[in-house]
Amino acid sequence: MKINEIVAQNFSTIFEDNLRQEICNYGILKKAEPDKIILEIRREIEFIPFITSGVVKVMRRDGKGNGIFLHYLTSQQTSSIAITYALENKNSEIRLKAESTITYIAVPVKTVNSWFVKYNSWRLYFMKLNYRQTSFLIEKINDIAFENLEFRLLKYLENASLVYNSNTINRKHFDIARDLKVSREAISRVLKKLEKEEVIILGRNKITLN
Image 1 (spheres, rainbow, N blue to C red):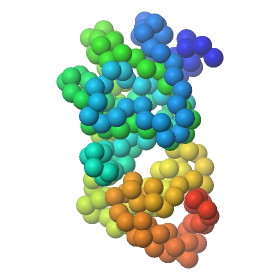
Image 2: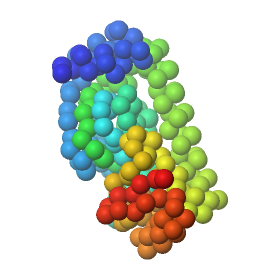
Image 3: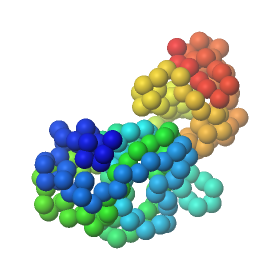
Image 4: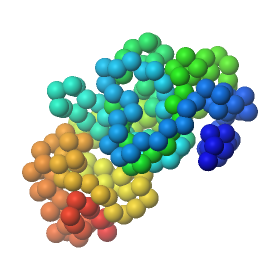
């Protein structure tokens, strides 16, 4: 499928004609396999990725092996955090990593920044995107501060289930522990408790919600 067809399929009801044409003119259609990093921390942000298929994980990393999962990006979305850093000419403080095979359109930062002046549909899109992603982060902070691990883990699994549109989440205990910033042993203990209560079914590197 050509880039103009993909842009029309994803953004015809979101962006005005001239903006969609700019995406086609300046954007580069790319594909990435699972675990491929498309934006790294402490690196200059040269382009903004617009996801057209697949799932991207947004993470905060400190460069010392520590990190925490922030939220997902799916089709018709991009990262409002990355755009904000780019507007201020700052290096990225987040990592965007492909969770599945993804396709995305990489648009140069300079082009994206110009849209704030030129296109009302872009300003509206960014405000809605920023509100949604900021609300998710505030909710996440609230969960870490006030909720127990069982609540956080179930919420994490339910969110992953919604994003992938499947009751089965293919995920290792270690990966969940890293995303939630807790020990693998703690995750395994809570998962076994949830399985005993028949909330979930555990398999090899997969978890099924009942």
